[in-house]
Length: 146
Image 1 (tube, rainbow, N blue to C red):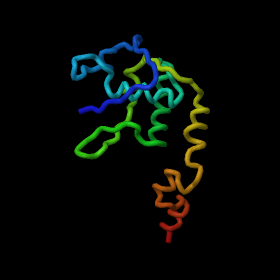
Image 2 (image 1 turned 30 degrees about the horizontal axis):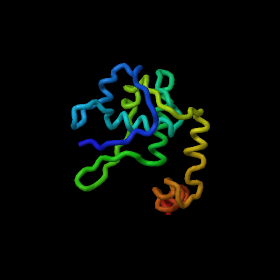
Image 3 (image 1 turned 60 degrees about the vertical axis):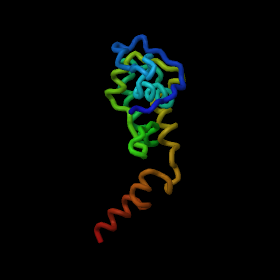
Image 4 (image 1 turned 180 degrees about the vertical axis):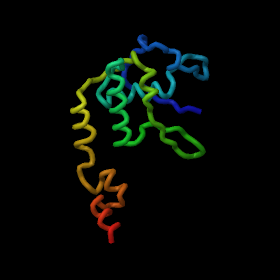
């Protein structure tokens, strides 16, 4: 069973070609946004693109992929007493062309500054440092030659 997400920003989807793909029926028979659409609407302002067009869809996909890599998933399903992370895909984004949310747009360089350049500057907490068992790549390479 899908979880539910509260949608924070205002949004418009009247220009989405297949709007019916974005909705499902709730337990009362009312049309509500599906989980993926809610997740995307909440993520778009975070990565600095608030309108999905043919021109912006690739940039949005790249930013969301980078954002997921840097932060992990913001969205989970409950499965057998554990949370399973789920991620937006390129297909999820491309089927939402025409979607608009509120928020500020900013260029890719600013996105990088915000989410990459200033994230985990301290070596001890960086994802790469943790993934390498608190060792640098050079240390690992030199140790493998011994």
